[in-house]
Image: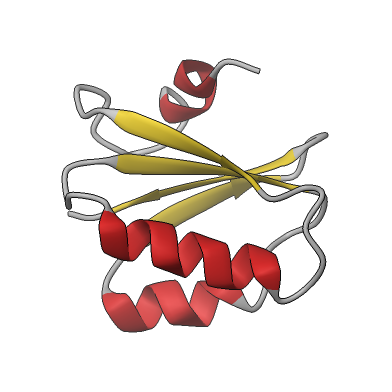
Length: 85
């Protein structure tokens, strides 16, 4: 899976660096916890691409609260692109 192919389909700034987080094999609530921890560690300019086996429904309110933008693609795997303005 090429992260760039998903980044190009979002409003995320394509010139920014990106990182991948594969949460497909993690039991709940690890995907939520790991994603929030990774975002806290990353510079605001980095776009995070999360792979999951389902839509991260519990993550969305947390992202909204922290001011992140995101877009999810319901594919296999489910891909959520997360970025800061």
